Image 1 (cartoon, rainbow, N blue to C red):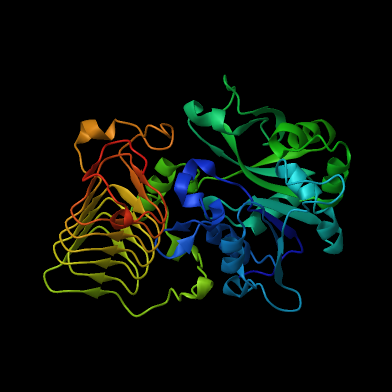
Image 2 (spheres, helix red, strand yellow):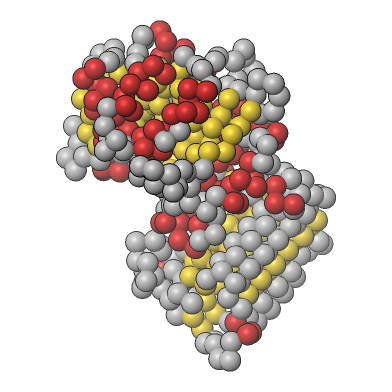
Length: 425
């Protein structure tokens, strides 16, 4: 780890992430488990740590308790000591002229006092809900060499996807000369990653202009292009916004592919193994005689008696004899009972799939039947099982289904033997 620069880091972690559906019903998007051992925010926090930056403010808002319990004192990422620290910054709800954060720039504006109390030459602004590895020290060096007022991390994406991002038009020196926020007819394929380095003095000035300027991409960056030198910092590595169920599932599956470009261990990504009072660094996983495991990640504390194929299992998952888990992401302490089958599903913590039950049954045609209540969330066959839900023995759950957190079929007076494709229950 190189000598740290004096930049202050502000990590935006208050988003609802509603397209993740029941996965964010009781936690903020950055707190969603990912890749067996991690939470999404671990990637940003670890990147900050590995870049040698010492001071971090985490801006929370939506359902922050799980996130706060996860971050704790920041010790898991070495953010403790006289000159190191992480501070959780809740919204100033209830104060005069203040409300919940209305946008990315508004969130930073409401924490100007934190910026002023932590003097720095630069402020690094990050999102807490992306999966990537990046050296912010290099980006700060680039920013200083360019004598920029603002530098934004940018990467090439297909033009068909640019409508989801801010887009920068650059000259031969990578200076941004024009900006389009989520353009319908893009002039460039260079997309903003939502990662910024600001000269602190200019950031404070930009935020003082107009309280109605609430978003960096829509308001602050276009103004900065007119007033200061704004540069694009090119990024060529793995980066994914896991804001949808499909993108979240895809990123988890990428961990299993050697050629995908994502490697949390090699990147030095750290989880908090002691969060929530349930230690993640458990005894080694146990693989019973006769079990089958193929192309999968199985975390500590798991017990595999059945078959696991192309799946990501968090700590403490039990797969009983004769059970099959395929193409799925299973969170901590879930139990797949004997003879059960889980195919193309995401199961939250402490889910229990009863004996002989089938989750995600149906052929390729069934995968095309979108969820009736959330057709833009579930449309490719993935089924969601909410936290601490119980699927009764022998029950069949179709494709693109949702079983809500805490649902326990055996407590219902009546329940269907089969939950049809695209249903929510």
